[in-house]
Amino acid sequence: MPYITNSDRKKFDLVINDLVENLKDSTALSGELNYVFSVVLHRIFKHKESYQTASTLISALECIKLEFYRRSVAPYEDLKIKENGDIE
Image (cartoon, rainbow, N blue to C red; front, side, top):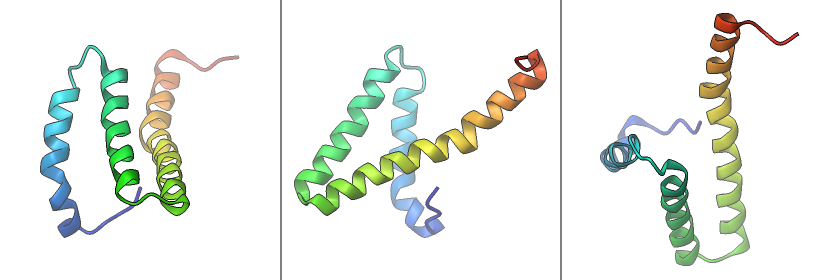
């Protein structure tokens, strides 16, 4: 996770909080989340079209995926292994 300063986080937190409120109870989360991320990525790319921008965006997505798994999904899976037992 990119650990940006608290002051830099503040410019995003209100928008993120609103976005989460709109998405958290969604019955179409996969599609809506895909839409949100796609629009953000496409707009950033259109603003500054270049191979470097494309590479940066793709790299960020891959790092986001890995960090989400490491920090959120893996601990959840470990908890479920403790609760339900591991595979043999």
